[in-house]
Length: 467
Image (cartoon, rainbow, N blue to C red; front, side, top):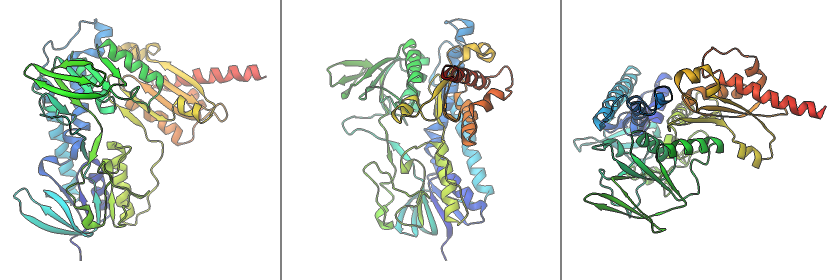
């Protein structure tokens, strides 16, 4: 008889939810992770610390209050790294306690160390002391996550040349910084450091940034960041990064040279699978360290599952949690609904971005007709009260059946607001539901009613002309 019904390697969002879901179904469950990484990258170097850092930046710089109190308004004049990390350490400590408590009260065994396969049902646990012991399980879930991809030509030192995991360990707020890569992580940190007053240069080999987002939203974000003195170098590739006593010099293939205190690479992530001895379990990973799974998150070996960032896109904490729960239910023979394709995307830039459904460009490419309804925060009483005159909500509405095809939000609370649109779309609701609904006043949620009225007024004009 195996030691456990389910063994989970990794305690990040995916592994944690898989373990708890199986435990709730009465299974014997164990989790293996390094003692300093309980909660995974999400808790220690990714989602939670970066979003906490963002809150600290917004609070201490007073950035979002400047429309109300003037451009010179700051809560603290000289913001240090200690000011920023105090909040981060507090939140991370609390979150680790919450996770340990959840695992403990659900009787999930937590083993400190790293795991590697010995055979398809056996994992060798290497403890911190170096001692090894074997653990067997009927089902195994791989939830090892990812690490930042590091180009071999760059000499990272964790102090002046960093990846997105080291950036939280900076000794001081840099006066200037080059960020290589204009993906989600790159743009989140670019906006945070720009808000702190760092002179930021973003280098991106593609022609634009965040191409999964609405074009109008991205234009607004670019405008905001340029207003904070961010320079964009699109269509440019880094040829070399030199470290000098007085800082760094980033040399682009076009010949440009950019001096800065620090350089941060945000060039994608690599699956943490190299130490797992996957071949012993009959598994392989692609060149980016990712594992292929089916719709139930089963690997090529049916009793071994993989969830979270290690399986690739969308690589979000929210989707990883749902994948973990879904994998555990399937392994335990419990019926499980398919994950809805309406997954909201949240990007914690300053201001934040969130969307669900399709963009205008996607609908145009697919020849799907749509009408647009827009609400701007400056027209809402709540927008004036909080001092956000730039935010906006955009609804994309089908003129045929009046359902929502996409919802795009930019500004304060965007990642919260999006769930109203997600719920209406998920339940097959129409724009008329939003027109007739009563929203609390004054709120940002009221933007749905304003945007819905805008869209229906446009649809009415089309109908009038048709008549």
